[in-house]
Structures are given as structure tokens and as C-alpha cells.
Image (cartoon, rainbow, N blue to C red; front, top):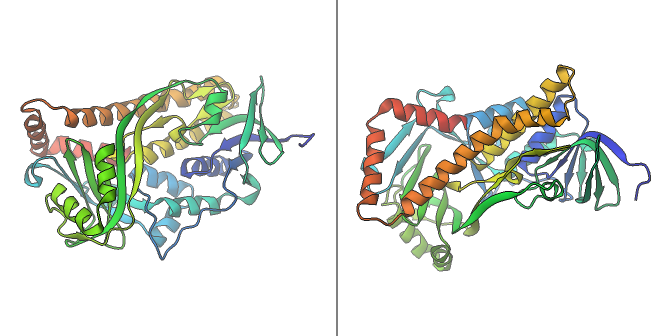
Length: 392
């Protein structure tokens, strides 16, 4: 173990997309950053294949990635614009139709692969800022520093540690920050499929009593499925052969996408809600999934994490420019106040929608359908909702 610990301004723990974006943002603002990532190699995007994990990036997220000088490379490789979206429960003809004609760039967002975003961010961060193939095995907080012992035998000290490790955050545990939340007893089944009807950039989402089903437009003309349902139903969907699965999906989507075929191997992810009681502690800040997990129905998980990273970078940079102690708890609290209320609101809305559509009361589903129809007939309300989703 090193007798003379290496020092830096900020140690970012976790090299997923949110952690990478955080590290790149701080490095570009002149902070001495070390990104600690357990993987020993850079993320690799395969242009000949298609990552099963895709995200619906909002306009705000795209703007942040543009500030980090990676958005042009992402778009030049593969990104699918999403100018419209249709949402319904009982009948596609009586659902909501969102159009992006009045929004900046004329899109609601873009569908982009996980590996592509991660690769572009990794390539943007200088090699001297990366501690790959290492984990923080021991974390100790002191008055003016945080000390991290790494699994490669080295020791790193920093003025601030940022947790971006995901839901199982070692930094969060070391800081003594509690969480609240629950498992939904549901899973998301994901894959990509061929569609008989060209998607023309339109996303489709239907709310079923067992959970929402979404088909997102991909740049190669296919559609990406995110089917949230009960654990038992998810297990049954995985057991079907490809033809039976596609037929079942067509029925669930009321043939709104035409005939579906050639699904890629199906993957399953357990769904849960989690929220940290605090986002910050002395010498510690949490971002992304280390601070919150959300139901995937609104596709906002990564957008919330990127907004966390952008806000935290802004607060640290502003404090330093004003001559204040940028690593002080009062500075970190400004970040917490800016992000915690917004994230809690989004978690509450998605959780309420999930519970509303699962509620089994006479006439309740009909009432929800009438509510969607009322919003469809209120153009100003629709415009506000579309703009809010694009900027989340």
C-alpha cells in the first residue's frame, strides 16, 4: 500500500454514464478529478450490433452532453430522433398524441444506446483521470479530506467524494445515509424487434393493469421494447418462443405497430423504487442511481442522473469562482436543494401512475381512460406535458 497517498480535488466513484459525465464536467472546469471504476477496460460500442440497453434522452440531457463535447460524436454514430409519442390504455384512438413541432429541435428526445454514450464519455476523459480496474474498498471521512483505500493497493485522498456506483453505493453506506423504497414485485422485459409498420420516429406506450408496455424507435428502423409487468408474467414472456412472444406483444399493443418479428434475445430487469434520505454529507455527494431509482415507465432514470451531475458541477464551479469553499457542506446542500425536490416529484408521479393502473376497482380503468381523453382535448395542457418531459 502506498505510504504517500495521491491527492485530488474530487474522487468520482463509479464509471457508468452518470459518473463519467460527472468526471468529464469537473475536469473541463479545471478540477483535479480521479474516476474510480471497477472495469479494467473502456466501454465498447459495436456499430455492427445494437446494445439491448437504450435510453430516451431528453433535450436537457442532450444539451448537457453537447456541453461535454460528446453529443456530436453520438449523433454521428447512431441516435434516433423521437418527434412524436402516442400513449393510451384502452384504445389507441382515444389516447394522447404528443407532437414536438413546437419544441426546440422538433423532437421530444433521442433514443441512444448505453454503450455508445459511455464510450464517447470515456474517450473524452484524459487517461490520467482514470483509475480503472479498481474499487474503493475502504472509505474514511476526515475534517478536510476523504481517504479512499483502493482494491489495487493504492490510497487516494480528495476534498470531495461523489458516489455514482449505482443502487448498491458503498460511499452512501460509508457516509451513513439511509434510503427508503420498495421492490415493485415487477420486472421489465427488454429486446429489439422488427416492425411491420415504419415507426417514423414515433414512440408507443400502452398502460395495462399489469404495467406499461413501450415501443421506442431505433435508428435502424426497428423498435425497442420495454415491457413492465408482474414477475410471473415476465417469467412467462421469457419462456415463449419468438413467434408466440411477438404474437402476444402485438395483442398487448393492439397491433398499433403492425406485425412484430425477429426479436433479439430477451432480457429481464427487476424494478424497484429507492430514494436516499440525503444526497450529501460532509465530503460526500450522491448522484444518479446512488441517490434514486425510478420506475422506467417515463424513461427518466438516466435523465435525472445527468441532471444531477450537471447541477453538482455547476454548484462546485460557481462556489470556486466566487472564492467560497466549494467542497463545504453548505455548497453541497445547494445541490441537494436543487435536485432532491425535482427527483422526488418524478418518483412520486411514476409511482402514482403505476399504482393507479394496478388499482382494481369497478369503473376505475374507464375513469383513467376518460382522463387521458380529456388531456388529449386540451392542447395547452399537452404542450406543457410534452415540454416538461423533454426538459426533465
